[in-house]
Length: 472
Ligand SMILES: [Zn+2]
Image (cartoon, rainbow, N blue to C red; front, side, top):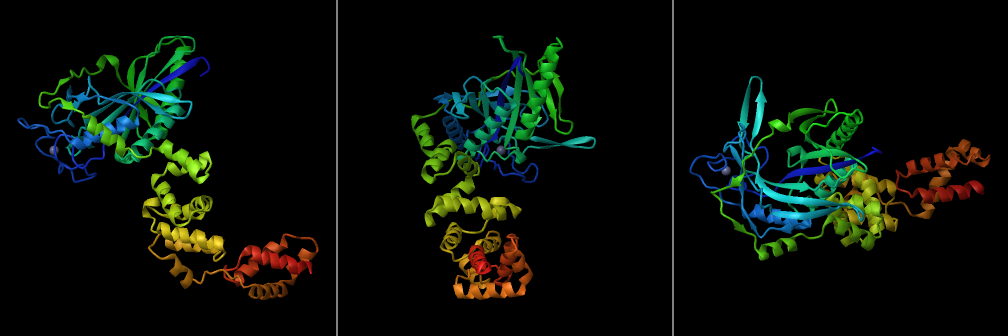
């Protein structure tokens, strides 16, 4: 895109981590049987009154603060009016003129900052399930609290959009605002994109993109759209302001509706809800509860544990793993050694588990023991793998496994010498080959000796003895 600048803005909806809906006390649990988590309020029965959930306000403020927003000290809700079968009230309670947070930013890297125009609270709509010839409505989701986060048009490439989403998700997960589980629809993203000629001061016509259900999907849709728009502009054609849907099968965007058909939502203040003051005390409490943000933790890991930037990033991207890493360090202090085990044999085992890290059973204390025993020479590499294969998926003590499986390393020198002697007499051909200059043969002999010890010897110790013997 040499002759064009790409201008992208993202609109992200995340489901807030509250137990109750935003304007009634219905639960928010996922996959409850259809229309069981509903009441007259979230179904919009006449004469009912919404009651604002303070938990949603708190999480919204917390997210606003983490995104460096200014917080509105007085907020009110507005009705966004439209008709759709999944919307029992025929309006959605949202915020329009007085968003909870505004003028924030997200620091993607030391050099790149993306503005956050606004964050605001609103309720989710229900869900339609389309069947052959008819549709069913499930209102369990109606009234679930959402936070809408709107970026400034500061994003300059599809990859940067991807990075922004990854960074945003991590922050929201760290501060406990949302699980951001995209498969459950807890994070949804719409994008808008336009191209402008390099020297031009005015923005091009923007196109809205919907229906992307992964970060990779967002990036792919933006890449497609970038190419499509450039092609049109080069051919002297106009870009139509419209909403386009991403087709994940055909890897294309296609037009859903043009601007002319776009809705006029006739926003007006909801007469059933008063103005709410956001007190300094509440803001201070939420600031306090922010805790350590991912970027701060990344920096601390580099300094405190002498990890590289990349190692640190990989760890903090997986919060439970990063927490576990720090727990293990309480029992064994060498961060390098613990990191090496964690990212080597430990993750190998974790990757075999169906539930991933969530299903790990080994305690931090026991994992620290594995590192310690290995460092002390009590167990070797093979034993480490064996222990982890048994202790990671099931609750089994490391000490017991070592005892039951007889995994203690043979460090008795005389015993090893005997084994090597045996191996040499049984494999005289390989020994001769080694002496004739085929040094690779030693590898075979080490293997034979390890077999005899059932993997309990130190391969290096065996090799040392073998090489000494073969040179005699
Ligand atoms: Zn309800």
